[in-house]
Amino acid sequence: MPSPSRLHRRLANQPTELANAIAASRMLFRVGRLLRACIDEALAPFGIDMHEYLALVLIADHAIEPLRPSDLSTTLDATRTQITRLLDDLERKKLAQRLPGREDRRSFEIALTPTGRSRLREATPKVHAAYSAVWAPLGADGTRELLAQFEAVHGMLQARNTP
Image (cartoon, one colour):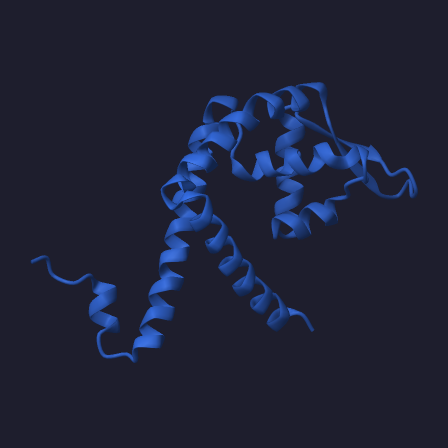
């Protein structure tokens, strides 16, 4: 019989509920890291990573509602510095561009370039296939139930962190 993992040894003397909460949190961190690696692998042939892909998806929606860097920062949970670097990279790759704001010329909006639209169109089926493959073992019902549980935890954490 294999020896228990370091985490399980550490949690052995904890109350069951606490041990489960810690183990679930640690597993979620690991799953998130591995999921990101899976998506990055699917995107590698397109020369972009998951954050760049998500930014392109959000920027593509700008025709309906203009996208500002602050919107991108909020949605991607990134700092202003991280968003500036992300936008610099997308511009360097000729996938996105900064345009003067429609309402306020002191601000700017972000738009996809024709190359960015094309890259997004090519990459999306690969990303969707990767997502589907990752969640397929749970089945549709299991994925839906897990999503509901994630949403409940997210709502609780968001409420705690909102002043």
